[in-house]
Length: 363
Image 1 (cartoon, rainbow, N blue to C red):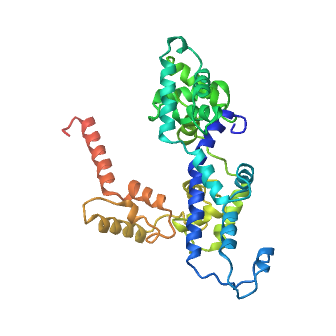
Image 2: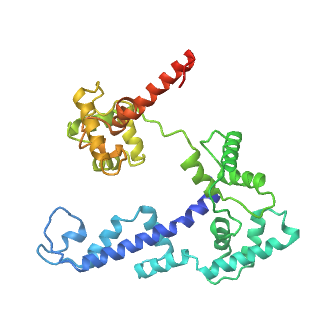
Image 3: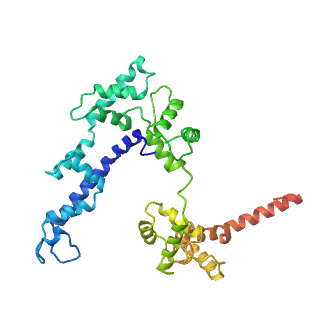
């Protein structure tokens, strides 16, 4: 869907501004840090041409480390894009100019917004398509260093004051799901068409609208219920990885972040953690009956943590430091369904009141 949707690609390009600014800032910070260090040659691990040309024991020029750091922190697409758009001389200055061209100034955005508002005041254009209005406004805008295509992309993605920036309502969410079910099965979605149909139904006056990026982001983060399925190869790799680390390894905190980064960088860490104790994948967790010592320990921990303010902080009592062989969610379930005195009193009280009511007694 991303490859075939030009409108969504246009919005995604506008989101690259912050990413490129962050990359430029990181490279600048790395250069400042390296300039304050004494860089001494002391390793033979790197056998590249640039490294072998430096004599052992000599001080390595700062430019070498700066270029090497920049190359390792930039993707292939970024490198190609930089060479096409900037050139070979004055790379740092050209990159700053490129980033500054991507950033729209407040005066430029206001000029676009005023032009769009004036175009919408024309009664003859109120029934026109949004793209026709944006094309006309972009062609008439006289902004230095901005092309007509850039003006149209800015208006379509963020500069148009008609774009609704509030949270999606239940009506909008249900309409998005209905449109997706009507047009496709959710796998190959044309988000420009989805946004167009949504705006036609909810905003027929064309004074407000949702962008394809907003619809795509809302669907992926909120409406999409089907998660990426786990394959048998992934499960096998996962259980072998956990078994190789031994019983002392806990898939929580730093261990979870490390495992997620090495094996399943494309998955949510919470989904990885849930996969372990919902499918019995983690060999370090035990799923046997709770012993009396464990139940007594959990009750004492809840009492110890709740003595200060009267609350029951279950997240502290169920930490891995107290129950290293029990999943935190299973500890919470054990307390809330079995040990919690409030739940037991409530169940017993409801049962007694129900029996007395059937017998005709007073509650």
